[in-house]
Length: 392
Ligand SMILES: Cc1cc2nc3c(=O)[nH]c(=O)nc-3n(C[C@H](O)[C@H](O)[C@H](O)COP(=O)(O)OP(=O)(O)OC[C@H]3O[C@@H](n4cnc5c(N)ncnc54)[C@H](O)[C@@H]3O)c2cc1C
Image (cartoon, rainbow, N blue to C red; front, top):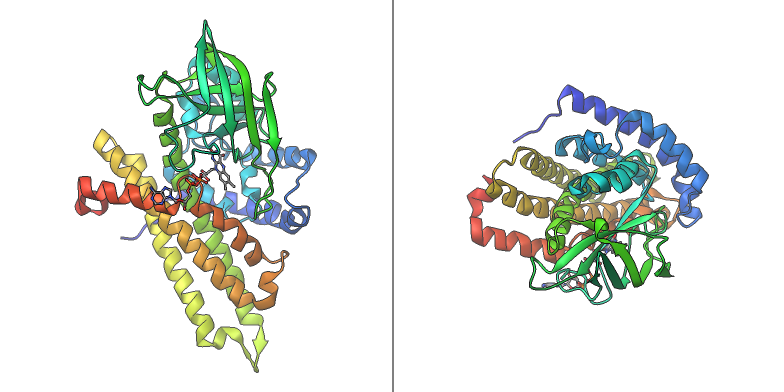
């Protein structure tokens, strides 16, 4: 099975690639040396360059202010933005796909401004005692008249340092639905505090603060979805993110292979370019082969999502997304390891692309469901649906 991009998608790919190579990649080393800091003014200026390209908010419908691309087109965008380190590609802002499920009033208050780049969102599920199992939370939302009172702690809240509102998953009555409910919470609400800005292996432009919620009062109008429907919405978010993570990992591996190949051809040791040595060739050949496989899977998962019509087809997409995420994230880590080795001592310097990816790609095997969790999803889907239903 081969895939070819339509002329429209090829044009989209070239447009995003130009942005990444001309505007984002040149910033990498400066941002790395500043431990991921990008000033608000630089952020704003870059966003204004990105806005006319029409590639932001790509998963949201136009009615909610988005640019309404297919999953396949979003994979094209994410593959290209994955080619910049330090998460500079996130400057192409992409509010969570599930925000389109907000009601009309919430769309005007939260979703449209986020799609326009006027407000920024983060999504808080994880807690000190709830990670892979996001169904049993300690953060509670208790009904009080027409309001809800939220108490709890959320960890690793990506973009929580630059966002101004959060979609928070809380435990509600376990007898209703999946026992979880989502809320929009403005981060300047009384009772919301940052506990800590932890430091992580990577130095990317957004942080992951820990947040405390102490008697935070929100009106029922801020409830996102049904009472007891929160976990189901979060799972839809995970599904979409898994395919886009796979795409970004393909982009990262692509860049690593390009850069490592160019270096190997130029670097002379023992009188020959190291590209002439078979142990270098093996690393590059394995990397390219694995990237090809990961790209085929990722585009196939996106196409399956675009084409799914029945409930059963949509369920199959979950397994395909997990396979794409599992394989592409693990592939990208292997490619980064090979690239560091090819660069030798240079590959251990923070100014080097392989060193940065070597650290940055590690988390792709952890967030949005660890590799172990993806394997569990794939295995149960296999038991339930069989081989043919999943891979044809
Ligand atoms: C940089 C970063 C950013 C993040 N951003 C966000 C965010 O924006 N919002 C958010 O809500 N969360 C976020 N997370 C949290 C992330 O989704 C969790 O870290 C992840 O789901 C794993 O949970 P955990 O860390 O609690 O590990 P645990 O669930 O405690 O798992 C520990 C280990 O046990 C394994 N394990 C667990 N259960 C099983 C099982 N049944 N079978 C086999 N192995 C198992 C895991 O695979 C893992 O290897 C982020 C995390 C990081 C590191």
